[in-house]
Image (cartoon, rainbow, N blue to C red):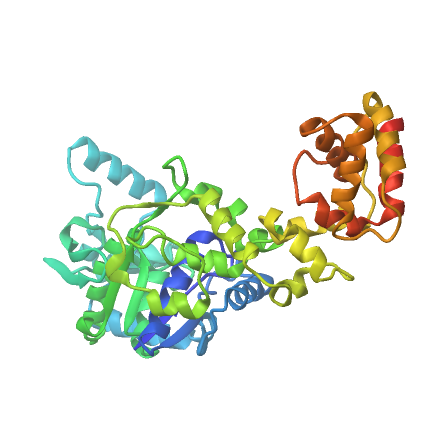
Length: 444
C-alpha cells in the first residue's frame, strides 16, 4: 500500500490541504503502508523553493513524516513518453481554437439548450487544415478523447460512484507551450510510483472518472487504485472555506501558538461520527477510520479547534511545554498560568505580567484602598501563603470583601479583568514589583 500527498509549492499549507495530508498519512501508517510526498512543481512561474520548504516544515511540525519524495519537474521525460503514446493511439488530438472561440461555442450551445461541452470539432481537422493553421503561426494544445460510457468505482467514503464521460468535455492535457497539466501528470506518477490508494477532496470526483479513462488508455489497470473522496470543508457560516485559506494557514496557526496535536486531532475527525478529542499522533493513527467519515460537507469551527488546543495545553506538564516557555520561566510559572492559556502565543503575555513591565489601568478612585494594600502587603519573601495573609489583613483595615476587595488588586497587579489565581502569581511577581504596580495604578 502506498498513499501520497501532492501539494503545489505555490503557497503555504492551509487547513484544507492539511486535512488531506493528515488523512493520507494516517491511513498509510494505520495500514502499514508507505507515504509519498510528491511536489507538483510543473508551474514554473508560481512554484517557489521557499513554499516547498514551508510545506515540508509544516508537515514535519504536524509529525507527518514521509518515506519518499518526488518532484514533477524532474519527471518531464516520463510525461513526454505518455504524451507520445496517447498521440500514437489517436487519443490525444491537437486543437487550435482560441479562448474567444471556445467561449462563443459554449454560449451558442447554452442558447440552444445543449450542455456546454466541447464539440470535438478539431477531431475532424484534416492534415491540410492543421498544416495551414501551423503555417499561420498557431501552436496546438492537446485534448484527450474520452471514451463513451461511464467509469465506476467503489469509493471508501462516498460508496458507489459513477462518472458519465459523454457529459464531460475532452480535457486539455497539454498546453500550447508544451506544459503538461495535472490531470495527465498525476496519472503517470500514480502509475509509475506505485501509488495504490488516493484520498482527496470530493471536488475531484469527475476528475477521477477522467483519470481512470486515461489510465486505461495508457495500458494501466484502473482497478489497482482505491479512491476515497472527502467532503468539502465549509466555514462556520456554511460558505466555502477556500475564501479564508490565508487566515487559516498552518504557518499562521503555528505562529499564533496552536499545538500540532490539536490540529491533527481535529482535522482527522472533522466530518466524521467520531468527536474530536485531544490525542497523541499514535492515537490519531490507530483511530483513523474512513468508514466513519460522513458524505456531507463538514464545517471547520475555529472555536472547536481552540477548545481542543486549550485542553491539550491545560494537561501538559512543565517538561512537555518547557521548550515553548520564555527563558527563565520555571515550573511554578507554568503551573500558575496553564489553566488560562488557550494558545502558546499567550504565554509571553503572562511572563510579562509576572516578570516584565505592564501598564496598570488608572485606579485613582481606589488610591486610598491601594495605599492600604501597600501597607498590609507581607514582607519578602512572598510565598504560597502570602495572598491569604495579605487579603485577610486588607479586609480588616478596609472593611471590604468579595469583588470590592479582590477586583482592584487584580487590575492593579495584572492589568486584566480575569486570569490565573493571584495566590500563585504573587510569589512570582515579588515584593518590589507588587508595590510599584500598586503605586502606579493609584497615581495614573
